[in-house]
Structures are given as C-alpha cells and as structure tokens.
Image (cartoon, rainbow, N blue to C red; front, side, top):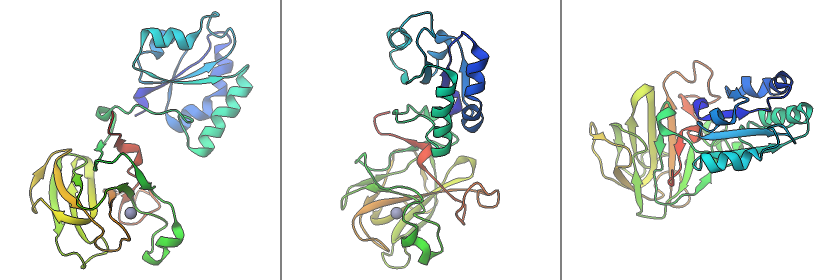
Length: 257
Ligand SMILES: [Zn+2]
C-alpha cells in the first residue's frame, strides 16, 4: 500500500521539510518528493502546503487539473514545525491519511478483501469492546461485523479454497460458517450464516456468492462476522490475538472502488 501514497513537500529548504516528516515516513513507509508531477502519479497524495511553497501556484488545483483520479490530503501549514506536529499526531493516532478517504489499489495488497455483503456498512470494528470478549480469552472483537440482514448474500472476499464448512447452527460460536484458504497464508472465516452454499474442497473466486446471512451461533442479530487469519502472525507478534487473527481493515476494498 505504501506505493500508492506519496508526501509532496516544498522545494524551498527541502531538507528542513524532510526532517519534519521523518517519523511519519518511517512509521508508514511513505515516499516523499518535492516534484508535484511525480506526486501526481500516485493515488494518494499528502501535500505539505505552505504559502509560496510551490512557486505561488495553487498546487491542489494544479494536481486536480492534471490528475483527476488522485485523492489529495492537503495539509496547510506555515513552516516545518507545524507540519511535524500534525504528522507526529498522525503517527500516534495511526491515522496515516488524516481523515481523507483512501483509494486502495487491490493489486498492491498482500491480499485484497473484496466487500463480502451488499451493504457498505461496518457495524463493529476490529479489536473493540474488550469487555465483551474477555470471556472468550480475546483482547477484543476478533474480526469485522458487516451489515447483512437475514438471508442476504454473502460473498467470498478473495480467491481461494473452502477448507471447512459448518452447516449445523449450534455447534460452534460462529454458528453455520465457512472457512476459505487464500494465497500468502491468509484464511477468512464467514460466521453466523443462514445457508452455506459451497462445499468442502471447493475453489471459489473473489465476490462469488458463498452463503446467506443470519444470526446463528453466538450472535444477537443478523450480520456477517468476518475473521482474517495470517499464518504465523501470532508467533511473529504481528498481532495481539492468538490463532493468527489479524485486522482485516487494511486489506478491505470498499465496494465503490
Ligand atoms: Zn463479530
């Protein structure tokens, strides 16, 4: 994902600006440039926009005119010190893009997770509500919940092979559910289903209909619970969760992308 994000800095006193964004660049692996034309070749452009930083041209307009498909994250600041403060705040809050909507290029992700329901709404984020999950030995919600009214479609997030299906509604906290093995050691779990429409061993492709939504198992209303696992993630301490559970959010491709 780092390849789709670039930080555009004023050319004047360039290295003062570079120094100001050092922690941000190290934390997120962002490329930097003083060249607006180069910045325009990336999908997400964060601009350190200081008065007369870009030869008195309106650099946002300049970029928008030439590169209409990029997303611009315009930070208006007067000096490197102000930039430093804003970027370090983003490092602390893990908000790389501030509040801008991010364009994710699926081909740049280790795994792209296409949206698994027909409703572009997440009803419970990853890692939240630790008090509800302590009884299961979990540090928080171990996946993402998506809006999915009863009997609505559930789709595979990515190409893979079905390696487990549970068709009994009451035998597992996940209820009726499907597990798919993907490339690069990733696995997805689709929980609380009403119907399982694939078989053990079946190959599926991203966006393929695999089930119907419900509230089977440990659930209090119809929705889709999606868990993502990455082989070895727990042992490598890439996650606070056991069982190789990782946050699916960075891999999600929003439905309008
Ligand atoms: Zn859930």
